[in-house]
Length: 106
Image (cartoon, rainbow, N blue to C red; front, side):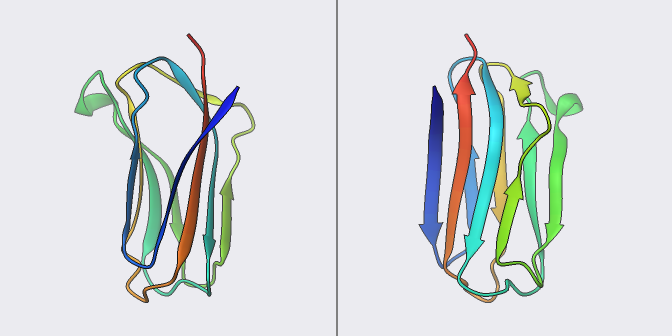
């Protein structure tokens, strides 16, 4: 069963998904009220195994973007304690809707 971790607002995005079980990242969706302005949106893995395993999963310049979908060809597998962090400065204070879609695997 797919689960959703959602956030909305008109300030910086700093959203963390930290399931307590093994999981798959199925999709990340971001909608902005208008093209975003300067700065990169990032989706990163903060690995439970330590900083040597952290990874940037996506970096996207939001200047001309109103809708962004990260849809892996295959779902990414993660262990309990891994965190998925979505971050964006939102200097133009665009209203956003963020949906991180994931599913348990254990």
